[in-house]
Amino acid sequence: MRSNPTSEQILFFSDAVIAITITLLMLEVRLPVGAGELSDPELLDALLATSIKLLGYVISFLVIASFWISHHRKFHHIVRTDGMLVWLNFLFLLTIGLIPFSTSVISDNGGSVATIFYAGTIVLSALSLTLLWVYAWRKGLTDLEGEGTGALLYPTLMPAAVFALSMLVALEWPDAAKYSWLLIIPLAMLQRRLPGMG
Image (spheres, rainbow, N blue to C red):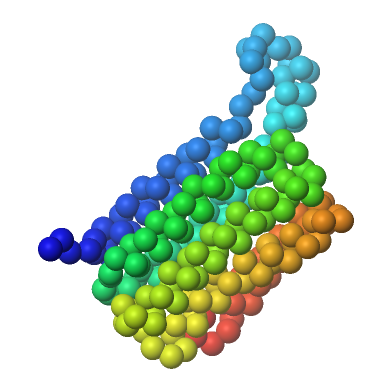
């Protein structure tokens, strides 16, 4: 009978998938064909036209980076694995893999549907990582008990809450919904100040 992958093997595979996902983000940022033939003013205009895609890249890079940090913190405390945990990790990676596509969508179209689609992708990633952690804790696969489990739960639930609320805002005001994502910054700072969550 085959044994399940170890937490180290899952972490190594996940790191590879996340690294590829971040690389795919940058591939979406391109100058128009024939940019080498442009004059300086035309090239400047072309660069400014890509600023939305660059901003989408930066935001998504930071979101994925925060998920990577949270994933590592959780797997630092996951000492045993089982088949379900492996598949829950695959679910998390599946949602992470959607981020480059949703970034491309919101970079090309800043309307309500694109904003909701992007925010929904982030919510799915956050909830899948939360589900993975809750499962590991309830099955006794971690070395933490009590308050220690919450310290690793809230950092993934907070982004999920912010992006979920932004989906409601985006129904009427997609630009306001995007600005609401900045709430993650003070929430992250507050989370570090709370006892047992730094």
